[in-house]
Length: 509
Image (cartoon, rainbow, N blue to C red; front, side):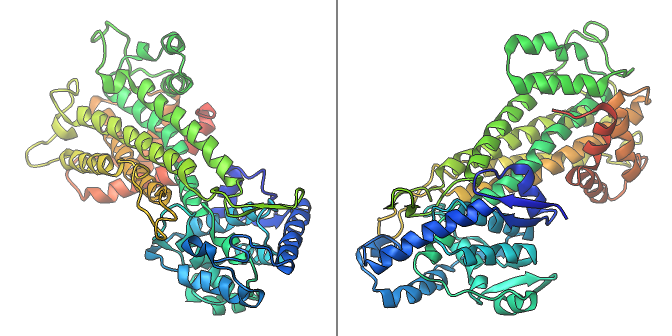
């Protein structure tokens, strides 16, 4: 069986998805084991010497000035976990939980956290044997890391809390027993090492990012179908135009559209039917391309964070030093997650505007109102556009940045927090809304193509049209539309439409 090896330095989005979604087995790199042991040895030495080191021989947060005796360290670690398990709301999806566990194990494998190897191996065994802690979605400030949700992860490791095992929700201890994994007793520094990090926001954000990258390509497919349905002008996609501006995402989006539309008899040239198209068609490469560039930036930041030491204090075995810093602060992910929400909102915004042009007889270049040939008795796609408009309006509310907010905690010891986990959760919600809007555009574009009198479509759009039509038939009379919307969304969410198009024309950028 293929495995993903973790060493604290080489995690990427592809490997993350393999473990989080495809449940690929995980193994700890041998060099990582050595590093973990060295940092733990140093922590044990400091305890023996009774040094005053934050989180090892002191309390936490505002209690950092209280020294903890050796006899109390085990109680301190357990109390840290149970007192910090204050998450609320619905449980995070299992794929997000798996991502959290993977990323925390990867961060610990850097050997800068002072945790025992056996505890890291327990976390990896839980991943491999599919013991998935119940982690509530809300309760993190994003500094000091994702304390509350990560505490719920650790509850199961110590035989508390709840977990899903073999699809059944049960107590954490029962899940561990059924999986044959011994629970752990945490010792000095270990509770803090497990919960003081940004892995919840990073996991949720990485899942949203992966889907956003695919959705940006599918947005090009939907736009290409709409361009055909409206006899759009392809001159605006000429590579010379986009090279003249120089933005990479714009160049890629224009190239995607031309490849999708290659050989189409339904598009036009400037001056044939009109001189130029409206912005929602003509500026598609500029708008989609800006999102692509944003996603590239966000991916860079997410992959850095996947391999980051994000707890406190940081152990430096080579120098025999311990430094209390702020690597748990989620700001480096909070800002990209807010950016992700904004970038996705714009994909939905322009998609809804193209949908409006398809259904509006004043804008659709001769198509029947609301894409029904029997208007009056039938409403056609009228309320589909309403629904899309509702979703893009909701996205505008959700796209307000979470990272500009902060509220003091721990008696003002922690007086600036990132709200990065809220930003990641919002980005995921925006993604879901955007996917639905683009699903509606796909349906409307294919309906318009049929009403226009389907001629030869482009090399890529023909495949996309047939993929949708396997699931959603042409609308001749009104029917229950949400069922069609769900089917259209499914071929986007599962990447069926993207995979089938790319099998014919090659990878989209």
